Image (cartoon, rainbow, N blue to C red; front, side, top):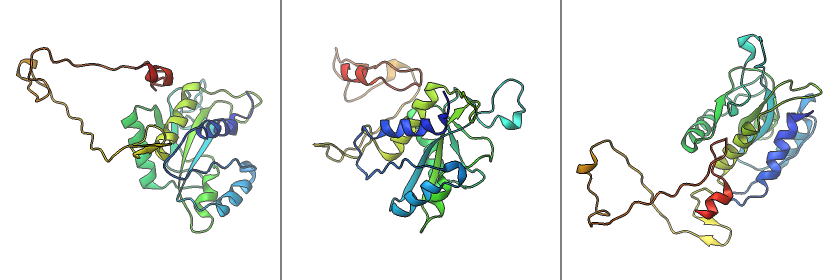
Amino acid sequence: SKALDDRVGCYNLLRLLEGAYAADVTCAFVVMEEIGSRGAMGAAFASDADTAIIFEGTAAGDMGDADEVRKVCQAGKGVAVSFMDRTTIGDRALYQELLALAQAKGIPFQPKRGVTGGNDARAFQRVGEGKSACVLSVPCRYIHGPSSVLCLSDLDAQLALGLGAIGGKDSMSGSFEKMDVPPTLVSFATAVGPTSRVTSPEFKAIGSRVVLLQPKYTDALLPETESLKEV
């Protein structure tokens, strides 16, 4: 398809708008990124957001015998998270939080291995008081050619990491639509040892059972929505 940069970002913003969130979320569909982020400048000026997460496409450069230095990210290896490009230095704390979130949730990701290109993050970082900004990119081959290529699992990974970052339906915010959940502490622990020596207050009686609830997963290692409902 042509113009995947930045039709991919628009597509995932539309998907993101279907959700419900504890925080105020504004999706800006802007123009003229390639000639100075002129649309993003206006959006950044009008926005009072604390944080800006940019959804975009970026050059994969992983074709054939391309020089290694040009292979800044690879199609099929997950969403590319940028620490810096030619116009923006990503917020360090936000960058580290996104990487940790992707690891914790099993979302395929890759740090973008090169200071190349530029995007609308520059506008949000520089206008007014400036905003904490970071970029989530879908690797695209032949990015500005008449026919570019992406991996659908990378597209889903971009959305999943964006949803996790802003706190979507799977967040621990304590509220969703008309439902409220009281403050809850959830703790997980694991250890290695012989099962004959395992004791727990929950498993003192003969016949105690352990139930495994296991949904189906997509190729991007994300649980399928309908499968979760069945579980």
